[in-house]
Length: 116
Image (cartoon, rainbow, N blue to C red; front, side, top):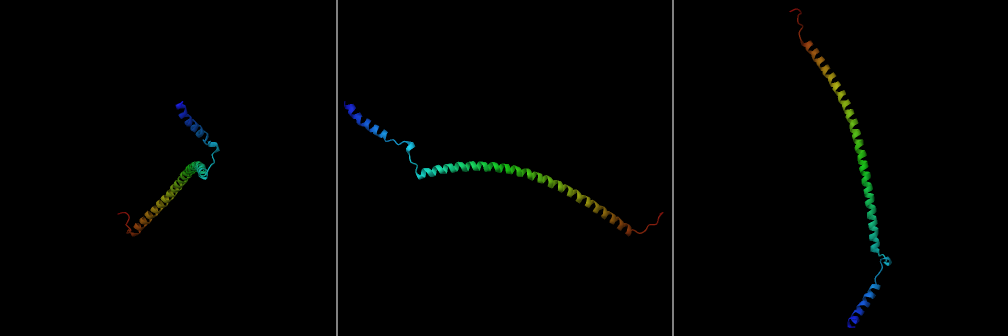
């Protein structure tokens, strides 16, 4: 009986404490908890938007790269044509210089008698 009388108050105390347990469903959300939840939601949304923007940036970078390659190809084509044109003009100028030099030499040479 002594053991029962000692255990009875402990059992009553445990029963009372078990009844005082607060259910999570009945918990009232405080301002800090609400702010934390909103911050979590905003972070998730920002992460989603950031991933979307990153993907769009990759697509835009690939498109820009293709456009730059096409532009470089066209520029190379135009430079080749310009180099050919400059080469032809330099060749004609060289021919004119040679012709003028030949004419100048002929003017400076004394007339040589033919037959000697």
